[in-house]
Length: 153
Image (cartoon, rainbow, N blue to C red):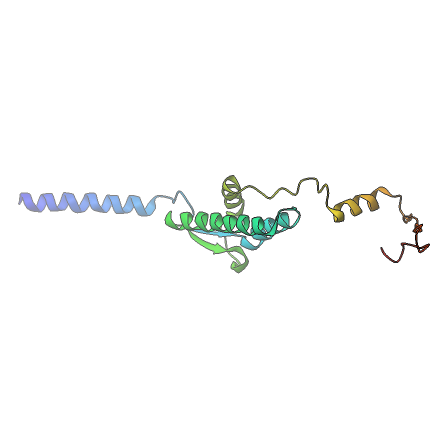
């Protein structure tokens, strides 16, 4: 008889625990989405504006991609199912792009385009922007050949 009472108590406690676990709201959403193309696009755009040597850009981009992958794997280990935002057509799925971006950029800095000083393209753009609208730079003549440099531009 005592065994049946103990078994009944154990089943009751187990039932209460299951009910509590099922009824408890999840602390983190089960399904989340991340806008990978926008994150990667902004990183690549920032890298393109830098004057960093190609080998360094490659290494930095690989580190960025590893950090993104690590962040998404950590979310998976926490029980989240990460959906690529571009594939989510409808539904109420929380977007964690900003959180992922913040966490990744805390580990991998955003490429610094700097002032662009010394870049021929940036220098030419600054010069063009400094001229009043409709004013082209006057053509100059080479003293040695007497030819105009307009065609060379």
